[in-house]
Structure formats: structure tokens, C-alpha cells
Length: 218
Image (cartoon, rainbow, N blue to C red; front, side, top):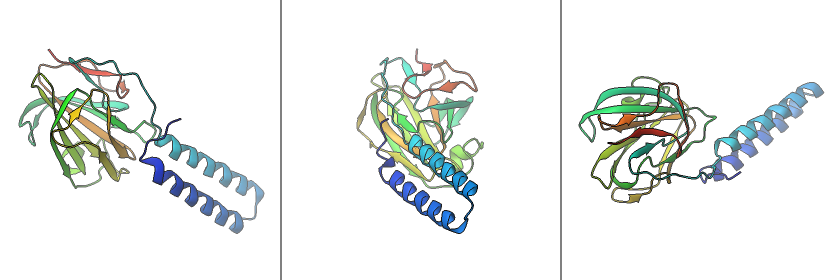
């Protein structure tokens, strides 16, 4: 299993904390059954931490008309809304909630270039809260396709997430499906799509980053 670079520091630190905590509790609680339970719990926690930073390699089917899922998760919002930060017009918002069990690698939903980027400090409301898209810590990323169509993607931190990573900058080209971000631990991604985009998913559908077609452009 490939580990994402964001896990290179966290996994060793988490391992050390778990070992020290287990050693302390092992010394304080001299009951074998409790020691066994604590040992199993430590192993489970270690597996969960490592699994969170997994970075699976996938085959991307490129299509200029398709807007593909930027992340694994569940579709929690499909609605028409006013995008007031960058596009400043009515758009279809599609939001994907990522639980701590999902792959948290973020991928470009389209090919083109980064036309806008801004990081906003903010709160850490639960990622499914209606105001999380505007009140939480977040990054807003404009993506301009070769056709001139622009979409916006917003990485939103959740109640547990404390680090949003984006690995590109304004003016840089992006390839559809390429890895260009990561969010730790549990979060949400909003897509702001043209009104004439044909939405291909429904509420509660499970999306797979780089694979699921979220919408199709005319």
C-alpha cells in the first residue's frame, strides 16, 4: 500500500505516541486481560492512522466533457446556489463529504489551469453543517478549462480536520485526475458547476476520486 507524503511525519509520531501510551498503561494496570485489550486497541489505532494516509494508484479515463470526482466520499449536496467569491454567478453546487475512513487525496476534476486560489482561515464546524462552506477554514480554487469554461472547487475543513493542503498555484496547468491536494482528517469538497452541466450523481451516492463522473458539460 502506497502512503501519501502527508503521512510521512504523522505516522511515525502517532506510532511513538501509541507505544508510549501503551507502555504507560501496561505499567499502571497490571491485569493481563486489560493489557491485551489495550494492545489490540493500540494496533487498531495504528492501522486506522496508516489507512487514512493511503494513496492508491488508479487509472484515469480522460474526457474533456466530464467533471470527475475530486475525492472519495458521499454526495451530500446538489443544489443551485450563488457563488459570490470568484465566479459571482449562479452555479450548481455539488458537495462531497469525506469521512476519516475515506481516501483523502484530492484530484483535479478537469484539465486546464488554476485560474484562482485563496486560503480562508475560519471555524471548524462539522463538514455537513450548512455554513461550513462559508464559515470554516477553506481553500477556493478556480479551474479554467481549455474551452474557457470555469468551475470552482472548495476544500473545506471539518470538525476534526486541521490541515488543508493544495500543491499548485495560480497559472499552473492541471491534468484531469492528477493529485493536487489533501485534507486531514475528515472534510468536504464543494464543486461549483455551470448551470447547463448535466449532473450524473444523486444525493447519498458514493463517489470515487478520479473515477466517478460528477457531471457532463454540454
